[in-house]
Image (cartoon, rainbow, N blue to C red; front, side, top):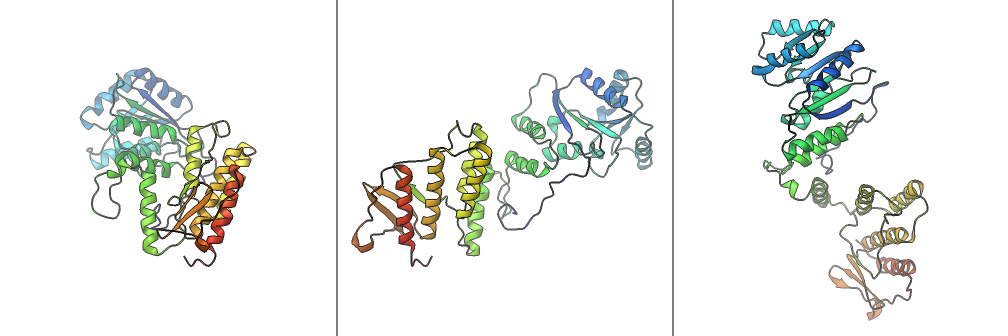
Amino acid sequence: MSLAGIRDMSTIHTPPEDRLAIETVVREYDEGLIRDAIRRELARDGQVYLVHNRVETIGRVRETVARLVPEAACAVGHGQMAGDEIEGVMREFVEGRIDVLVCTTIIESGLDIPNANTIIIDHAERFGLADLYQLRGRVGRYRRRAYAYLLYPEGGWIVEDARKRLRALVEHSSLGSGFKIALRDLEIRGAGNVLGPEQHGHIAAIGFDLYCKLLKRSVEALKGSVAAGIEEIEVTLPCAGEFPASYVPGEAQRIDLYKRLGELRRHQEVSELEGELRDRFGPLPADTILLLEICRLKLDARDAGVSSVSLRDDKLVAVRHGEELRPGGRYPRIGAVAPAAMVGEIRARVRELGKGHAG
């Protein structure tokens, strides 16, 4: 709802002083990896969580840990234990008398043990993305580097959604990435209808970004906002600009820039984006200059109340409220042929058509 402009939201991106990002590893279940991870943590006098969320088999997991690392003091903790029993286990863990706590998701919230900086999650594919994020947050509570091992079954076959969840944890392992993980979770599960009771995940059909854009447009219409974007302005010209791969080499970067271009609302924002491009990628090529000019043309058309701009031979056809504009009974003529000059002349003509226009 905040993304759509319905509610306000603030986010904190600055981590606590000296806090380090948690190194996240996704691997097939491997007893050797478990042994090495535990011993590495014990070598620096740290403690380990091993999460196994099945009470009926958690005892066998503890036996496996004891076999792999016999020098480690192990204990079990889960929600079906008596209150005083689980309290005693946790007290011993906090005091450092237990090296490895084999536990369920009972540790998911409320624990802050600075000396526990390795967590191993068995059958990580069974957990939701929010659960995995919360569990990973149980380590790295101090200035020491923390490690999170997300293990899936031997053989490597897991369902696609689970694969996406594990990949998201690895991709967003930097400090302050919780908000990005929440967005990714919405994309994977589907947000449904945020304004009503239905939660059937149809957002997946169009993607979360487009869903938010459509919702935001509807909210602005209800508010009577006039600061519309440019995505609805239709411009048909014999020339087109782009972000060439030779200028912006990364495909993901180009997609992000095109997306940002469609969301610009003011000429100042276009100039700011232009300055950013010069700083990041160097002098603008002709195709990119033309693309930005076409973007400015769309803003000019929006301000003039024009919904469509095109050329018919050398005549400018501008449409406002479904009618083609012909000042003095004639279509304005465009004499320039070079793309940049042509767009510049069209911009000037559109601004003239907008004079005296009252929204």
